[in-house]
Image 1 (tube, rainbow, N blue to C red):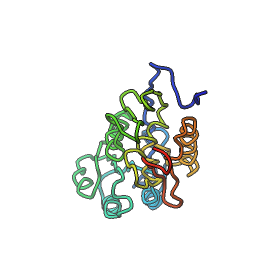
Image 2 (cartoon, rainbow, N blue to C red):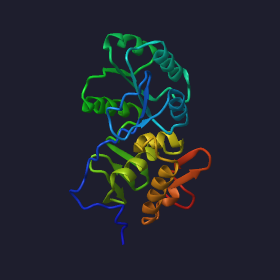
Image 3 (cartoon, helix red, strand yellow):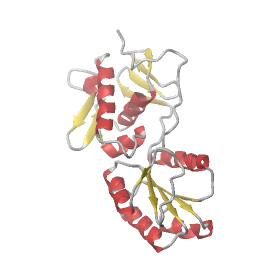
Image 4 (tube, rainbow, N blue to C red):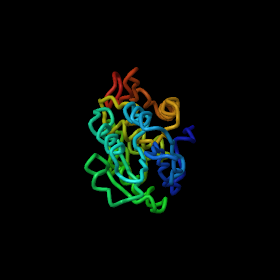
Length: 239
């Protein structure tokens, strides 16, 4: 019997919205509330640490203007090789100082007064750079193909529709076949909340492994202890 978590009825493709679980840092007191939900408010040093270790893919930075403290933080983040690819979005009370924030390393600057859905839309655009969405068709192994538009896994010519998170995880690993994909990249691809513990990623990988096992494909998904996970297109005695 197929795993019901693995397959969905035809026509039931859903487009779950990105949760945009980002770090929220304020560079002025008192701390202003975050304009989007499901963000983790933290201090500037903790934010750098989370961006370095890959537990978050983006930071939403609020300030009255692009002053010395904010710009110095942006430059630290951009010159840190462990978090240089992180998305940095700045909200300013005085958007007239936006140029300084952009020069320091911000990806985008918005006025603090914009509606929350504008912030959400900008984060969605930035996330496409950090974790490009699946597009087209991806060959995983002989007789094994992922199709992005329909979110189908084709196994020897037989299509199976996958749920969103397992599909995105499988696509991310398959797109880097043969290479180790670290936890940070996988968390970004799955939009795992910054506040979530490491077990959230382990659970997602374990679920995918169980789903693949139904079709005797789980040997392709390999754990590289201390580094991440790898998709092996060819396995000993297999495809």
